[in-house]
Length: 305
Image 1 (cartoon, rainbow, N blue to C red):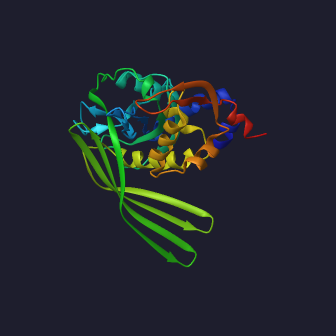
Image 2: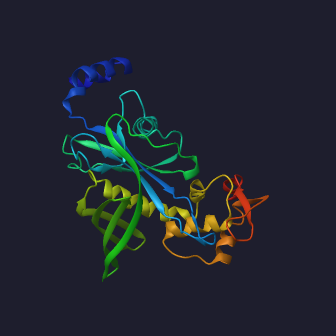
Image 3: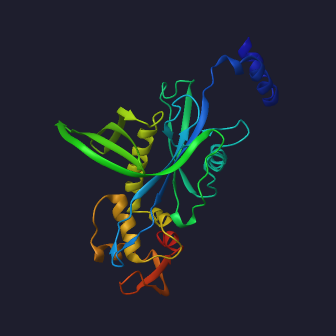
């Protein structure tokens, strides 16, 4: 009887009926956004000749209230009922850090039942990259005690492989260390990658952490994996250099992300279609002048020709 009644309703009538009788039957989770914001620190010249290497840095805020009061977390917050997640993440970023209008892409959705002690919360994470030269002075928002850039160090402490039939698994113990001045926070995570035929699945769980709020250590590690995975086939690394840059600077960015040294000739061959010579040069310290390049915006379209 009820089903026949519903079938005879117009769509407008059905929605009105649903909102009156069905809408409150289900407990609703809240939605938050978390932004993993990376930059590359500015290269320094030592003794007018020796260059200090670049390092990847991550933006974190110190929580001003419970839960995890005083601990460090990714920038983010709750999505309003009248906004989408893309709008929410940019708003929260501006409110908590003063940073506005940077490159960001949606990364992953985190929905573990117990990820937040307050209530059921689903978080949509974003990966963001910004050139340090474009950064405004950092300022903590109303609900944050502080905001800082942390140097990122990821170390695989132990790794073991296992093969059973057609299934290959790798279990890694990973140490994540984040440092800003005298502050060091850390987490130990277990990363398990299982490959069966053409299917590969990676799971990560936190086994221990100090000073990092919620499951944000897991989100950070996932972001590092995604960044490494994308750098070789996309233009993502160019978000970490200025509008004009030298090829050695660009190569250092790639090397820091990938965690290994690259062959100079092979690297330049890899990026040759992605860069344009500006006709300018820059001299750093006692080194001979280096050519300045800029990103070739047509490269992404040329891939489909």
